[in-house]
Image 1 (cartoon, rainbow, N blue to C red):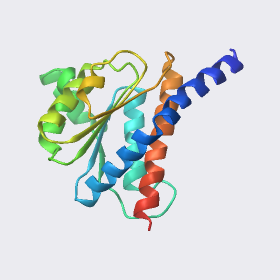
Image 2 (spheres, rainbow, N blue to C red):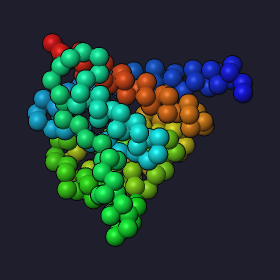
Image 3 (spheres, helix red, strand yellow):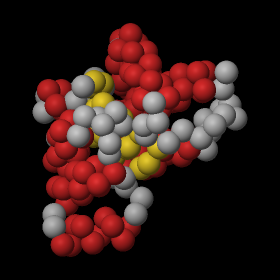
Image 4 (spheres, rainbow, N blue to C red):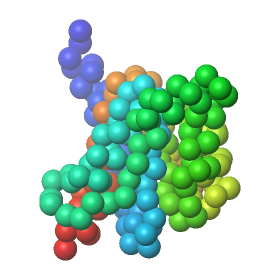
Length: 186
């Protein structure tokens, strides 16, 4: 275990978020506008990113730091019966796109989290979200990703280490929460 090397990689990953500060502020404003118009935020991810999707949906629905109204937010990763039935009857690659097709409305926000940036089910979900007129946001690692061309906004994290990418995604998502808290608690 090399703590200093891990720290240096962590700092490099976090700097990816800091370098995207202007875009992040724009995204927070777009999410505010969407929520104020009655839209909702839909989250998707696999593995650790699925846990992050659930974490973030809870931060919006319950609270982040400040007690405020609940913000409409759903993690598409939580219904085990739906996930297993769909994977059994259809395929895993369409597990999010089918949910988005049923649940998303024009103006909703769809956030896909993929450390690799190549998750087929995230890409298909984003494509359906685009077709439905949703605002799409992708959080990815540093790989060349089709999500760079598919999502309205894409936040690549400059690291090849999954753990560091996940840490930066959490930091970025918490900054979104801070912006939403600041707006909706006033």
